[in-house]
Length: 430
Ligand SMILES: *[C@@H]1O[C@H](CO)[C@@H](O)[C@H](O)[C@H]1NC(C)=O
Ligand SMILES: *[C@@H]1O[C@H](CO)[C@@H](O)[C@H](O)[C@H]1NC(C)=O
Image (cartoon, rainbow, N blue to C red; front, side):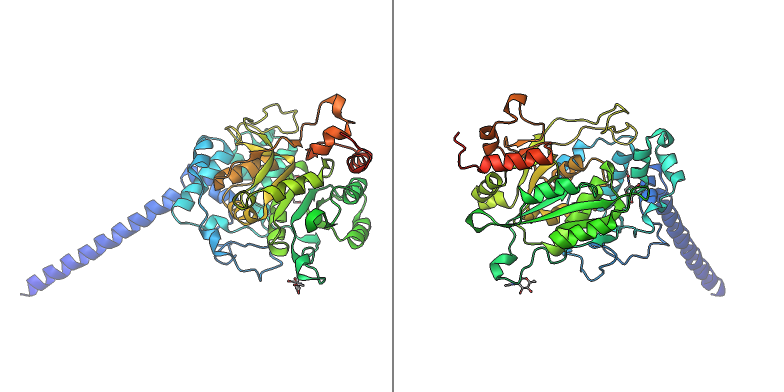
Protein backbone atom coordinates (compact mmCIF):
# COMPACT_ATOMS: atom_id res chain seq x y z
CA UNK A 1 0.00 0.00 0.00
CA UNK A 2 2.79 2.38 0.98
CA UNK A 3 4.55 1.58 -2.26
CA UNK A 4 1.43 2.23 -4.24
CA UNK A 5 1.03 5.65 -2.58
CA UNK A 6 4.65 6.44 -3.25
CA UNK A 7 4.20 5.45 -6.88
CA UNK A 8 1.16 7.74 -7.26
CA UNK A 9 3.05 10.58 -5.61
CA UNK A 10 5.94 10.06 -7.99
CA UNK A 11 3.67 10.02 -11.04
CA UNK A 12 1.98 13.18 -9.86
CA UNK A 13 5.29 14.89 -9.19
CA UNK A 14 6.76 13.93 -12.51
CA UNK A 15 3.70 15.07 -14.42
CA UNK A 16 3.88 18.37 -12.55
CA UNK A 17 7.52 18.59 -13.49
CA UNK A 18 6.65 17.81 -17.09
CA UNK A 19 3.92 20.46 -17.15
CA UNK A 20 6.33 22.95 -15.69
CA UNK A 21 9.00 21.97 -18.16
CA UNK A 22 6.63 22.37 -21.10
CA UNK A 23 5.36 25.69 -19.91
CA UNK A 24 8.90 27.04 -19.71
CA UNK A 25 9.59 25.63 -23.14
CA UNK A 26 6.55 27.48 -24.38
CA UNK A 27 7.73 30.69 -22.79
CA UNK A 28 11.11 30.22 -24.32
CA UNK A 29 9.70 29.75 -27.78
CA UNK A 30 7.56 32.85 -27.43
CA UNK A 31 10.53 34.66 -26.08
CA UNK A 32 12.91 33.60 -28.80
CA UNK A 33 10.24 34.32 -31.40
CA UNK A 34 10.34 37.90 -30.22
CA UNK A 35 14.00 38.06 -31.00
CA UNK A 36 13.72 36.82 -34.57
CA UNK A 37 15.40 39.14 -37.01
CA UNK A 38 12.10 40.01 -38.68
CA UNK A 39 10.92 41.43 -35.41
CA UNK A 40 14.01 43.49 -34.80
CA UNK A 41 12.48 46.75 -36.00
CA UNK A 42 10.20 46.56 -32.99
CA UNK A 43 13.13 47.08 -30.71
CA UNK A 44 14.46 49.91 -32.72
CA UNK A 45 11.22 51.78 -32.88
CA UNK A 46 9.63 51.23 -29.56
CA UNK A 47 10.78 51.90 -26.09
CA UNK A 48 11.80 48.73 -24.28
CA UNK A 49 9.11 47.14 -22.14
CA UNK A 50 10.80 48.02 -18.87
CA UNK A 51 11.36 51.66 -19.62
CA UNK A 52 7.99 51.98 -21.24
CA UNK A 53 6.10 53.95 -18.68
CA UNK A 54 3.37 55.32 -20.89
CA UNK A 55 0.00 54.12 -19.73
CA UNK A 56 -1.82 51.49 -21.74
CA UNK A 57 -3.35 52.91 -24.85
CA UNK A 58 -2.24 55.37 -27.43
CA UNK A 59 -1.31 58.88 -26.49
CA UNK A 60 -3.70 60.85 -28.64
CA UNK A 61 -2.11 63.99 -27.49
CA UNK A 62 1.11 65.65 -26.69
CA UNK A 63 2.53 64.83 -23.31
CA UNK A 64 1.63 68.31 -22.15
CA UNK A 65 -2.02 67.57 -22.48
CA UNK A 66 -2.77 64.36 -20.72
CA UNK A 67 -6.44 65.20 -20.26
CA UNK A 68 -7.56 63.95 -23.65
CA UNK A 69 -9.13 60.53 -23.48
CA UNK A 70 -8.19 58.13 -26.22
CA UNK A 71 -11.01 57.49 -28.60
CA UNK A 72 -12.26 53.94 -28.79
CA UNK A 73 -11.74 53.87 -32.55
CA UNK A 74 -8.01 53.77 -32.16
CA UNK A 75 -8.30 50.12 -31.27
CA UNK A 76 -10.46 49.44 -34.28
CA UNK A 77 -8.38 50.64 -37.15
CA UNK A 78 -7.94 48.12 -39.87
CA UNK A 79 -5.50 48.29 -42.69
CA UNK A 80 -6.87 47.60 -46.16
CA UNK A 81 -5.80 44.48 -48.01
CA UNK A 82 -4.92 46.70 -50.96
CA UNK A 83 -2.31 48.55 -48.96
CA UNK A 84 -0.88 45.40 -47.38
CA UNK A 85 -0.37 43.94 -50.83
CA UNK A 86 1.01 47.13 -52.31
CA UNK A 87 3.96 47.21 -49.92
CA UNK A 88 6.22 44.29 -50.86
CA UNK A 89 7.67 42.19 -48.08
CA UNK A 90 11.37 42.46 -48.65
CA UNK A 91 14.56 43.44 -46.84
CA UNK A 92 14.07 47.21 -46.92
CA UNK A 93 13.84 48.74 -43.46
CA UNK A 94 10.51 50.53 -43.82
CA UNK A 95 8.88 47.54 -45.49
CA UNK A 96 10.05 45.24 -42.68
CA UNK A 97 8.93 47.73 -40.07
CA UNK A 98 5.45 48.03 -41.55
CA UNK A 99 4.92 44.31 -41.90
CA UNK A 100 6.12 43.60 -38.39
CA UNK A 101 3.63 46.19 -37.09
CA UNK A 102 0.85 44.66 -39.19
CA UNK A 103 1.62 41.23 -37.74
CA UNK A 104 1.29 42.66 -34.26
CA UNK A 105 -1.90 44.50 -35.16
CA UNK A 106 -3.38 41.26 -36.47
CA UNK A 107 -2.54 39.51 -33.20
CA UNK A 108 -4.33 42.23 -31.26
CA UNK A 109 -1.07 43.53 -29.86
CA UNK A 110 -1.46 47.30 -29.78
CA UNK A 111 1.67 48.17 -27.86
CA UNK A 112 3.25 49.66 -30.99
CA UNK A 113 0.87 52.57 -30.60
CA UNK A 114 2.61 53.84 -27.56
CA UNK A 115 4.57 56.81 -28.69
CA UNK A 116 7.86 57.49 -27.03
CA UNK A 117 7.98 60.75 -25.16
CA UNK A 118 9.77 63.59 -26.90
CA UNK A 119 12.80 63.39 -24.65
CA UNK A 120 13.20 59.65 -25.23
CA UNK A 121 12.20 59.24 -28.85
CA UNK A 122 15.67 59.88 -30.17
CA UNK A 123 17.21 57.22 -27.98
CA UNK A 124 16.62 54.72 -30.73
CA UNK A 125 20.18 53.73 -30.67
CA UNK A 126 22.26 54.08 -33.70
CA UNK A 127 23.81 50.67 -33.35
CA UNK A 128 20.43 49.06 -33.89
CA UNK A 129 19.74 51.23 -36.89
CA UNK A 130 23.10 50.23 -38.25
CA UNK A 131 22.42 46.53 -37.86
CA UNK A 132 19.01 46.95 -39.47
CA UNK A 133 20.05 49.23 -42.29
CA UNK A 134 23.34 47.81 -43.52
CA UNK A 135 24.39 50.97 -45.38
CA UNK A 136 23.05 53.44 -42.83
CA UNK A 137 26.34 55.29 -42.52
CA UNK A 138 26.37 55.95 -46.25
CA UNK A 139 22.96 57.66 -46.08
CA UNK A 140 22.96 61.45 -46.54
CA UNK A 141 22.84 63.36 -43.24
CA UNK A 142 19.21 64.36 -43.83
CA UNK A 143 18.23 60.71 -44.16
CA UNK A 144 20.15 59.70 -41.07
CA UNK A 145 18.46 62.52 -39.15
CA UNK A 146 15.08 61.36 -40.35
CA UNK A 147 15.70 57.78 -39.28
CA UNK A 148 16.94 58.74 -35.86
CA UNK A 149 13.88 60.90 -35.21
CA UNK A 150 11.40 58.63 -36.97
CA UNK A 151 9.52 57.80 -33.75
CA UNK A 152 9.32 61.35 -32.50
CA UNK A 153 5.70 62.45 -32.57
CA UNK A 154 4.96 64.88 -29.80
CA UNK A 155 7.18 67.95 -30.05
CA UNK A 156 6.54 70.70 -27.52
CA UNK A 157 4.26 73.49 -28.74
CA UNK A 158 5.91 76.90 -29.02
CA UNK A 159 3.00 78.93 -30.39
CA UNK A 160 -0.59 77.75 -30.13
CA UNK A 161 -4.02 79.03 -31.17
CA UNK A 162 -6.34 77.02 -28.94
CA UNK A 163 -9.31 79.26 -29.71
CA UNK A 164 -8.84 79.40 -33.45
CA UNK A 165 -12.12 77.70 -34.26
CA UNK A 166 -14.38 79.10 -31.57
CA UNK A 167 -16.04 82.43 -31.48
CA UNK A 168 -18.08 84.33 -28.96
CA UNK A 169 -20.04 86.08 -31.66
CA UNK A 170 -22.72 83.53 -32.31
CA UNK A 171 -23.22 79.84 -32.71
CA UNK A 172 -22.82 79.91 -36.47
CA UNK A 173 -19.37 81.40 -36.03
CA UNK A 174 -18.17 78.32 -34.26
CA UNK A 175 -18.47 76.49 -37.55
CA UNK A 176 -15.53 76.29 -39.88
CA UNK A 177 -16.28 75.36 -43.46
CA UNK A 178 -12.70 75.41 -44.68
CA UNK A 179 -9.56 75.40 -42.58
CA UNK A 180 -6.42 76.40 -44.44
CA UNK A 181 -3.41 74.62 -42.94
CA UNK A 182 -0.40 76.11 -44.67
CA UNK A 183 3.08 74.66 -44.29
CA UNK A 184 5.51 77.50 -43.84
CA UNK A 185 9.11 78.07 -42.83
CA UNK A 186 9.48 80.45 -39.87
CA UNK A 187 11.53 82.73 -42.14
CA UNK A 188 8.76 83.18 -44.72
CA UNK A 189 7.20 86.34 -43.28
CA UNK A 190 6.59 87.91 -46.69
CA UNK A 191 4.94 84.84 -48.16
CA UNK A 192 2.65 84.44 -45.17
CA UNK A 193 1.62 88.08 -45.39
CA UNK A 194 0.79 87.77 -49.09
CA UNK A 195 -1.20 84.61 -48.46
CA UNK A 196 -3.20 85.95 -45.51
CA UNK A 197 -4.04 89.09 -47.47
CA UNK A 198 -5.25 87.09 -50.45
CA UNK A 199 -6.42 83.53 -50.79
CA UNK A 200 -6.26 82.51 -47.13
CA UNK A 201 -7.98 85.60 -45.80
CA UNK A 202 -10.04 84.61 -42.80
CA UNK A 203 -13.69 85.50 -42.55
CA UNK A 204 -17.07 84.71 -43.97
CA UNK A 205 -16.90 84.16 -47.71
CA UNK A 206 -19.60 83.52 -50.30
CA UNK A 207 -22.85 81.93 -49.04
CA UNK A 208 -21.80 82.55 -45.47
CA UNK A 209 -18.97 80.00 -45.52
CA UNK A 210 -16.52 80.53 -42.68
CA UNK A 211 -12.84 80.24 -43.58
CA UNK A 212 -10.06 79.99 -41.01
CA UNK A 213 -6.31 79.83 -41.44
CA UNK A 214 -3.30 78.48 -39.62
CA UNK A 215 0.35 78.45 -40.71
CA UNK A 216 2.33 75.41 -39.59
CA UNK A 217 5.88 76.12 -38.50
CA UNK A 218 8.75 74.08 -37.17
CA UNK A 219 11.70 75.79 -35.53
CA UNK A 220 15.06 76.88 -36.86
CA UNK A 221 18.41 75.69 -35.62
CA UNK A 222 20.53 77.73 -33.29
CA UNK A 223 22.70 78.97 -36.14
CA UNK A 224 19.80 80.94 -37.52
CA UNK A 225 19.05 84.39 -36.20
CA UNK A 226 16.56 84.29 -33.38
CA UNK A 227 13.20 84.95 -34.97
CA UNK A 228 11.32 84.27 -31.74
CA UNK A 229 10.34 87.88 -30.96
CA UNK A 230 9.23 88.53 -34.54
CA UNK A 231 7.18 85.36 -34.62
CA UNK A 232 5.48 86.12 -31.29
CA UNK A 233 4.59 89.53 -32.63
CA UNK A 234 3.22 88.03 -35.82
CA UNK A 235 1.26 85.44 -33.84
CA UNK A 236 -0.28 88.11 -31.61
CA UNK A 237 -1.07 90.36 -34.51
CA UNK A 238 -2.73 87.79 -36.74
CA UNK A 239 -3.57 84.85 -34.47
CA UNK A 240 -2.75 82.34 -37.20
CA UNK A 241 0.63 80.84 -36.33
CA UNK A 242 1.21 77.38 -34.93
CA UNK A 243 4.77 76.50 -34.09
CA UNK A 244 6.33 73.35 -32.69
CA UNK A 245 9.79 72.70 -31.43
CA UNK A 246 11.12 70.41 -34.12
CA UNK A 247 13.68 71.16 -36.76
CA UNK A 248 12.13 72.78 -39.85
CA UNK A 249 13.19 70.50 -42.66
CA UNK A 250 11.80 68.96 -45.82
CA UNK A 251 11.97 65.52 -44.25
CA UNK A 252 10.09 66.63 -41.17
CA UNK A 253 6.97 67.54 -43.11
CA UNK A 254 5.37 64.23 -42.20
CA UNK A 255 5.86 65.10 -38.55
CA UNK A 256 4.40 68.54 -39.27
CA UNK A 257 1.33 66.99 -40.84
CA UNK A 258 0.98 64.64 -37.90
CA UNK A 259 1.17 67.32 -35.21
CA UNK A 260 -1.30 69.39 -37.20
CA UNK A 261 -3.76 66.46 -37.32
CA UNK A 262 -3.51 66.13 -33.55
CA UNK A 263 -3.99 69.88 -33.15
CA UNK A 264 -7.00 70.05 -35.45
CA UNK A 265 -8.78 67.18 -33.72
CA UNK A 266 -8.35 68.96 -30.42
CA UNK A 267 -9.01 72.51 -31.53
CA UNK A 268 -11.01 72.46 -34.72
CA UNK A 269 -12.81 69.13 -34.75
CA UNK A 270 -15.84 70.38 -36.67
CA UNK A 271 -14.16 71.85 -39.72
CA UNK A 272 -15.98 70.59 -42.80
CA UNK A 273 -12.85 70.60 -44.95
CA UNK A 274 -9.14 71.12 -44.54
CA UNK A 275 -6.79 72.46 -47.16
CA UNK A 276 -3.20 71.33 -46.64
CA UNK A 277 -0.62 73.05 -48.79
CA UNK A 278 2.43 75.24 -49.27
CA UNK A 279 2.85 78.97 -48.73
CA UNK A 280 4.11 79.56 -52.26
CA UNK A 281 1.06 78.44 -54.20
CA UNK A 282 -1.80 80.43 -55.59
CA UNK A 283 -5.21 79.21 -54.51
CA UNK A 284 -8.46 80.26 -56.07
CA UNK A 285 -10.52 80.18 -52.91
CA UNK A 286 -13.92 81.09 -54.45
CA UNK A 287 -13.67 78.19 -56.91
CA UNK A 288 -12.62 75.79 -54.17
CA UNK A 289 -15.49 76.88 -51.93
CA UNK A 290 -18.03 76.45 -54.73
CA UNK A 291 -16.63 73.04 -55.55
CA UNK A 292 -16.73 71.87 -51.94
CA UNK A 293 -20.21 73.22 -51.50
CA UNK A 294 -21.40 71.36 -54.58
CA UNK A 295 -20.30 67.94 -53.29
CA UNK A 296 -23.03 65.48 -52.38
CA UNK A 297 -23.01 64.64 -48.67
CA UNK A 298 -21.58 61.15 -49.23
CA UNK A 299 -18.64 62.61 -51.16
CA UNK A 300 -18.27 65.61 -48.89
CA UNK A 301 -17.39 63.39 -45.96
CA UNK A 302 -14.98 61.12 -47.87
CA UNK A 303 -12.92 63.49 -49.96
CA UNK A 304 -9.20 63.43 -50.61
CA UNK A 305 -8.79 65.67 -53.63
CA UNK A 306 -5.94 67.26 -55.51
CA UNK A 307 -3.48 66.76 -58.30
CA UNK A 308 -3.12 63.00 -58.24
CA UNK A 309 0.20 61.34 -59.01
CA UNK A 310 -0.76 57.76 -59.59
CA UNK A 311 2.27 55.83 -60.75
CA UNK A 312 5.30 57.16 -58.94
CA UNK A 313 8.19 55.23 -57.45
CA UNK A 314 11.08 56.26 -55.26
CA UNK A 315 13.78 58.44 -56.78
CA UNK A 316 17.10 56.57 -56.56
CA UNK A 317 19.39 59.41 -57.53
CA UNK A 318 21.26 60.43 -54.36
CA UNK A 319 21.49 64.00 -55.62
CA UNK A 320 17.73 64.42 -55.84
CA UNK A 321 15.77 66.26 -53.16
CA UNK A 322 13.47 63.24 -52.95
CA UNK A 323 16.12 60.52 -52.93
CA UNK A 324 15.02 57.39 -51.11
CA UNK A 325 17.63 54.65 -50.62
CA UNK A 326 16.69 51.14 -51.73
CA UNK A 327 17.58 49.74 -48.32
CA UNK A 328 15.06 52.13 -46.74
CA UNK A 329 12.02 51.64 -48.94
CA UNK A 330 11.57 49.22 -51.79
CA UNK A 331 8.30 49.31 -53.66
CA UNK A 332 6.03 51.60 -55.65
CA UNK A 333 4.32 54.64 -54.21
CA UNK A 334 0.55 54.59 -53.84
CA UNK A 335 -1.53 57.11 -55.78
CA UNK A 336 -1.32 60.36 -53.84
CA UNK A 337 -2.37 63.98 -54.09
CA UNK A 338 0.56 66.37 -54.57
CA UNK A 339 1.50 68.11 -51.33
CA UNK A 340 1.52 71.61 -52.87
CA UNK A 341 -2.16 71.76 -52.08
CA UNK A 342 -4.90 69.23 -51.43
CA UNK A 343 -8.29 68.99 -49.78
CA UNK A 344 -9.41 66.57 -47.11
CA UNK A 345 -12.86 66.15 -45.58
CA UNK A 346 -12.93 67.10 -41.92
CA UNK A 347 -14.62 63.76 -41.21
CA UNK A 348 -11.49 61.95 -42.39
CA UNK A 349 -9.07 63.69 -40.06
CA UNK A 350 -9.67 61.35 -37.19
CA UNK A 351 -9.30 58.08 -39.13
CA UNK A 352 -6.25 59.57 -40.81
CA UNK A 353 -4.69 60.47 -37.48
CA UNK A 354 -5.41 57.06 -36.04
CA UNK A 355 -3.87 55.22 -38.95
CA UNK A 356 -0.65 57.22 -38.57
CA UNK A 357 -0.06 55.16 -35.44
CA UNK A 358 0.07 52.05 -37.58
CA UNK A 359 1.93 53.33 -40.64
CA UNK A 360 5.51 54.26 -39.76
CA UNK A 361 6.51 57.77 -40.77
CA UNK A 362 7.70 58.08 -44.33
CA UNK A 363 9.89 61.09 -45.10
CA UNK A 364 7.88 62.46 -48.01
CA UNK A 365 4.69 63.89 -46.57
CA UNK A 366 2.38 63.67 -49.58
CA UNK A 367 3.43 60.10 -50.33
CA UNK A 368 2.86 59.31 -46.65
CA UNK A 369 -0.62 60.83 -46.80
CA UNK A 370 -1.35 58.67 -49.86
CA UNK A 371 -0.15 55.58 -47.99
CA UNK A 372 -2.36 56.35 -45.00
CA UNK A 373 -5.41 56.90 -47.18
CA UNK A 374 -4.71 53.72 -49.07
CA UNK A 375 -4.50 51.91 -45.74
CA UNK A 376 -7.92 53.39 -44.95
CA UNK A 377 -9.21 52.20 -48.32
CA UNK A 378 -9.67 55.72 -49.72
CA UNK A 379 -8.36 56.70 -53.15
CA UNK A 380 -7.39 60.24 -54.07
CA UNK A 381 -9.73 62.05 -56.41
CA UNK A 382 -8.03 63.89 -59.24
CA UNK A 383 -9.32 67.35 -60.02
CA UNK A 384 -7.97 69.18 -63.03
CA UNK A 385 -8.23 72.48 -61.16
CA UNK A 386 -5.12 71.52 -59.20
CA UNK A 387 -2.00 72.37 -61.18
CA UNK A 388 0.82 71.53 -58.81
CA UNK A 389 3.15 71.24 -61.83
CA UNK A 390 2.12 74.67 -63.12
CA UNK A 391 0.27 75.77 -66.27
CA UNK A 392 1.87 76.23 -69.72
CA UNK A 393 4.23 79.19 -69.94
CA UNK A 394 1.98 81.23 -72.25
CA UNK A 395 -0.92 81.04 -69.76
CA UNK A 396 0.93 82.24 -66.68
CA UNK A 397 -0.32 85.81 -66.89
CA UNK A 398 -3.69 84.88 -68.32
CA UNK A 399 -6.31 85.79 -65.73
CA UNK A 400 -9.01 83.89 -67.57
CA UNK A 401 -7.04 80.68 -67.26
CA UNK A 402 -6.51 81.34 -63.57
CA UNK A 403 -10.11 82.27 -62.92
CA UNK A 404 -11.22 78.66 -63.30
CA UNK A 405 -8.26 76.92 -61.72
CA UNK A 406 -8.12 75.95 -58.07
CA UNK A 407 -4.41 75.88 -57.37
CA UNK A 408 -1.20 76.73 -59.15
CA UNK A 409 2.19 75.79 -57.87
CA UNK A 410 4.97 78.23 -57.08
CA UNK A 411 4.16 81.86 -57.31
CA UNK A 412 6.03 84.72 -55.66
CA UNK A 413 4.21 86.88 -53.11
CA UNK A 414 3.93 89.64 -55.75
CA UNK A 415 2.49 87.23 -58.31
CA UNK A 416 0.03 85.92 -55.74
CA UNK A 417 -1.24 89.42 -55.01
CA UNK A 418 -1.46 90.28 -58.71
CA UNK A 419 -3.33 87.11 -59.55
CA UNK A 420 -5.72 87.56 -56.65
CA UNK A 421 -6.52 91.10 -57.75
CA UNK A 422 -6.76 89.99 -61.36
CA UNK A 423 -9.30 87.22 -60.88
CA UNK A 424 -11.45 89.55 -58.79
CA UNK A 425 -11.33 92.43 -61.22
CA UNK A 426 -14.79 93.53 -62.36
CA UNK A 427 -13.20 94.42 -65.68
CA UNK A 428 -12.23 90.80 -66.33
CA UNK A 429 -14.17 89.42 -69.29
CA UNK A 430 -13.44 85.91 -70.29
C1 LIG B 1 -18.53 78.52 -29.39
O1 LIG B 1 -17.73 77.53 -28.77
C2 LIG B 1 -17.23 77.93 -27.52
C3 LIG B 1 -16.30 76.84 -27.05
O2 LIG B 1 -16.86 75.57 -27.22
C4 LIG B 1 -18.35 78.17 -26.54
O3 LIG B 1 -17.82 78.60 -25.30
C5 LIG B 1 -19.22 79.24 -27.11
O4 LIG B 1 -20.34 79.44 -26.26
C6 LIG B 1 -19.70 78.86 -28.49
N1 LIG B 1 -20.47 79.94 -29.03
C7 LIG B 1 -21.71 79.82 -29.36
C8 LIG B 1 -22.40 81.09 -29.72
O5 LIG B 1 -22.29 78.76 -29.36
C1 LIG C 1 13.23 66.49 -37.37
O1 LIG C 1 13.11 67.12 -36.13
C2 LIG C 1 13.81 66.47 -35.08
C3 LIG C 1 13.51 67.24 -33.82
O2 LIG C 1 13.91 68.56 -33.91
C4 LIG C 1 15.27 66.45 -35.41
O3 LIG C 1 15.98 65.78 -34.40
C5 LIG C 1 15.49 65.73 -36.72
O4 LIG C 1 16.85 65.76 -37.06
C6 LIG C 1 14.67 66.39 -37.80
N1 LIG C 1 14.77 65.60 -39.01
C7 LIG C 1 15.31 66.07 -40.12
C8 LIG C 1 15.30 65.16 -41.27
O5 LIG C 1 15.78 67.18 -40.20
